[in-house]
Image 1: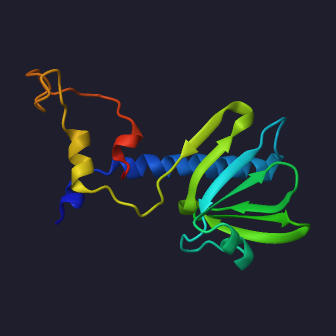
Image 2 (image 1 turned 120 degrees about the vertical axis):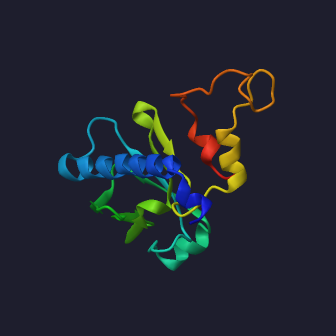
Length: 163
C-alpha cells in the first residue's frame, strides 16, 4: 500500500465536484439556453488525451485554447466525461470534443464567476502534502504553537496544487 492509498484525497474530490459544476452549467444551457448576459469562457489543454480539435487549431493553440460560448454555437452536449460543441472558425463550423479533465478554467464573466482546475491525473507529491498538513504556528516550528491540533480548518485548494 502506498502513502497515497493511506490518505483521503480531498483535493481530487473537490476538483471532481467542481468539474460537476461545469457539467451542470452546460446541461442547463443545453436545456434552457444561455439566460440574460451569461456566457462561458472555457480554457482547455489542447494536448490532453481525448481532445478532438482540427489540426490547424491545435497548431495555432499548442498547449491551451480558450473558447467562448455566447452567441454562435451549436450541438452542445456533455456527459460525465466530455463536452462537445460546434463553433465557427473563419465561418467554418468545427466540432470540438473536450474531456472535462482537460478544462483548466471555466468562467462566466457576466456574474464574475470562475473556476480554475489542475489537469485531471496530476498528483500532488509528498512535499506538497506535507506543506498542507504541517501547521507552522506562531513559533514557526510546525507544532501549531504548542496548542492542540486544529480541527475543521478551511484550506485553499492552491495548497494542494503542484507548483
